[in-house]
Length: 256
Image 1 (tube, rainbow, N blue to C red):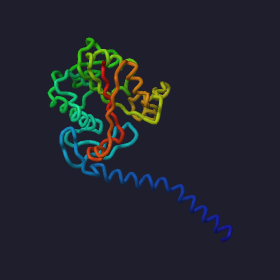
Image 2 (cartoon, rainbow, N blue to C red):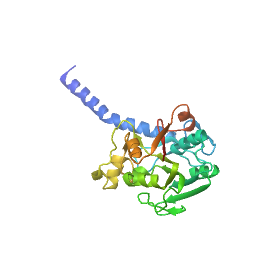
Image 3 (cartoon, one colour):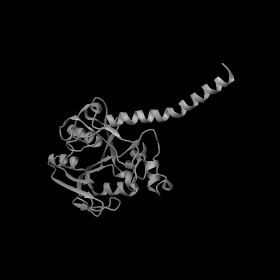
Image 4 (cartoon, one colour):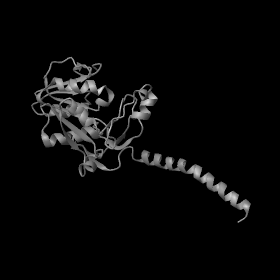
């Protein structure tokens, strides 16, 4: 091989190398489009629907989940996991329940279990019974048997919110806490300097209004408020059957 032919070969190889990530990205993008309306048959533990789930992702976050959204009740993975836990433990029947920022499908599911009292709340009061700031709850001590708090703690100051949740539970009452957790991290990541702009919060915490990514120390944060912590984990065969996130957890926190 001459010097000129060698140089030409290297130039062609260099062009191919530079184009390769674009080709791979385009290929993966086309695969994603192909499965936006479901890839595998699933089952919804919230409403009983059987069929294909739709893809879902917050437009401001990074990434999209295939087979995530139930087209009938609009449940997500976390809602179906919680419904499965309820089918094992009968969490809601006959209980006095406060539900933070309830999505419609899960709210309907909880109501169907005939709690003795069911109160919804939202900061700002939109489409909810009460307007509540979870960091400073204007309710009496020991008012509820159960609190449902799904994907809220990553949005607020949990050092203020968790003790408030403990306070308004009756003795023996339970908090259902769900939140994204990075189990490989011993410590929660919540650098305040990375919370200042929308772009920073998307980059570091995966969503425009997230303030942290919890590590495995979430359990200790809950125990510091005197909760006794139990866990329910998404495992197979339920993961594939119900379209769950592998390893996602429900933290059931009891006030002794």
